[in-house]
Image (cartoon, rainbow, N blue to C red; front, side, top):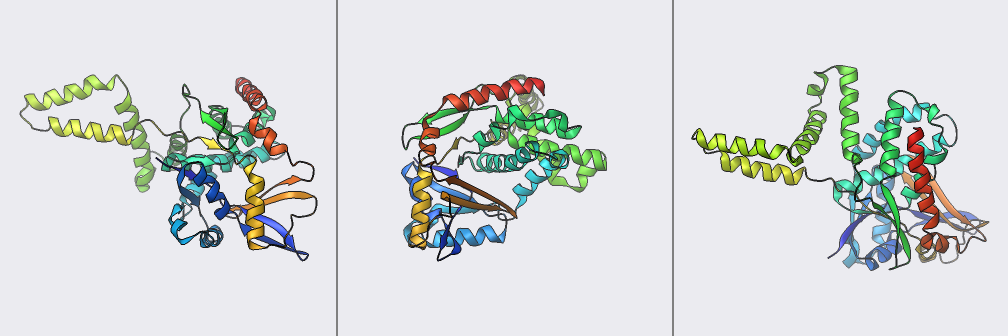
Length: 347
């Protein structure tokens, strides 16, 4: 049985006859994801630019495989929620590493929200990226609501633990089974609800019913899934029977449906590309531009766009084996995780 993976679109960047060129990596990445068992690739396209780049990648796939790719967040609603959630931190993060942490956290939370919504894994190394920052943050930079949201984010990051998958020699970050941290959608929905109450008062959410319904959904899930709720639900069913109102069965069905819909939140795993990054880069660039080479001083160079935000990642000449070492090295990420969890005490 296959599974779905969230994959933010990447371009392989190179130089051809002295001019910069770029090619979508979607086709070569799709082969990798299929080889690891994925049968659906979810690519966020919150703006027209990403949609155009994804279209180029899809066009390079065989016709029989183009239905592998599904565009998500085409209206940009989810990235908008993430950016609103991070706004208090962004306003106060004036220097490195705090401002860099907020920037990278956008990608982590965005992928996490998409993965949780679509019950999909995530093909990215963003957990390790943000984890590296947690122990070195100056928490005194954040005040008020920003400090509370920082605590929520760091707690969420620290619920992920590194592991190695032999198939394909790659590292994954898995949610801890005993984690009690709030899931990402609960954070986003409650933050939006609190903001509305703070700015518009208790009647404010009536003007924005979606926000109220999201909050209600969280409350219903908390109630339905709590063991102490069962006697009350049973009592309601019994009372319905005694009163002669034939709604007991309907109550039972409603509880089943609501309990299933608002069940335990899905916590998506993160899977890194690992050493496959090099192969994906080369295949993507040379398939489109056979005579193109990496930018001077690098052996690979990726660019990605996210609704106006541009990110670049690269490897320098001489770092050919860096990806392989990182893929099998568990000692460093485990050490970083312990350091990050210790930093939560300071926060």
